[in-house]
Length: 519
Image 1: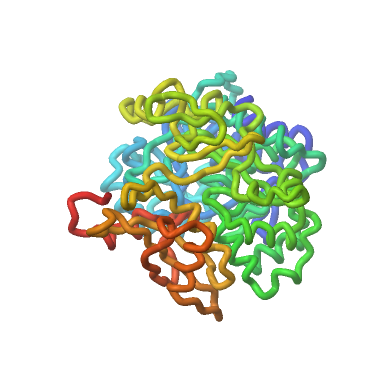
Image 2: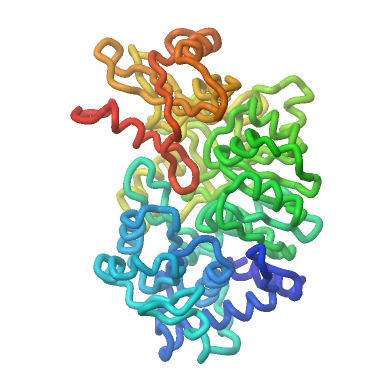
């Protein structure tokens, strides 16, 4: 199936059910589908934008129903969606727009002030449309669509056609344009259905940007008539209230937001019984906090592991597997990311391209139709990440005797101290277990004796206190002296990307400034 087919199947089955809702009003599948046809006509018509097939189109907006409709209008038109995250710094989005040769930008009025910079620095952009109001120098979506009514001609089903240029994370360098095809999204949806069968119309609470996992999560839900409830921020109490109010069945959140919910004094005041799958991903989650989440939200916690280059579900950890781990005394599994997904091959590889047996650590590699077509205009990076016929994730992991996959660390986050390889995520698991720790990051910092020394940077829960030596001794007792932090810094808030990932590169810069090497 093509990406647009998921929306159309939802329309066929549930035309009068709300497809999107902004907590004030809803738009039915019939209304959204009609909008996508009109948007497609306006994008391609000579008297409209006059874009060619394959032209790149972006949406610069917070989560918004008209932005969601525009996304599927782009897919219907044969143009290519080039998502940009509204929470990024403008400099990053300018780079993405220029690098991907974007020609038209749908934008929200809150970003009106950036249009002059986009015009000046992104020469391919030749048109703007404001999705929520008349713009100062661009038409409103309503006015832009007024001449265009009817149905856009159906296009062929081309499995390997690129339908999106998703930007890679950018936490270790400039983001690259990941070419996603119809087949990639179809495989992701197949993995979703295999792990999370849907038996009734879902209610999907959309909190994080639709440009990332929250948007991708919505795709397989659409054929079943999902209502996507859009929130404008990640306020923990509002999230919990909306789960109860709208009888939410599905949502995705990074662990950082889940931690804020668990620490909220009203976390037990709401009804979560409607939940089917509370998906967490994008970063490791503390096993202690995961146990508490299962206790509070119910047996619904669901983990997926993937990346832009291997769309969202390369592994899957079901609610039933979480419960089984607790019931069978195998709580160590809670720090895994589940088993390889049904329609994706996953293995562990050494630096020479040899696949490793279970129990040995190496780089996590995947292959199959979940993997991107390549990086846009970057054949060298494509070849590098595809060595030995597998996609290289850049994550270090292992597979245990039962087939569960454990992410040991990011390959570039590994600390070499005194000749020993130290993986920060294992130290972070210990620190997260301390009742005063809200979140933490472990990095390597320069040290004359050891080369690199282990440092923990810690956020403390409001109203709690802990001293550095207590955390150091905790790690020594659990992991040994090599793995224990030599120092601990306390910080009000860790630097994070717009999707909630801790920016260890940013943390490290302070300590490695002025040195020729950062290792």
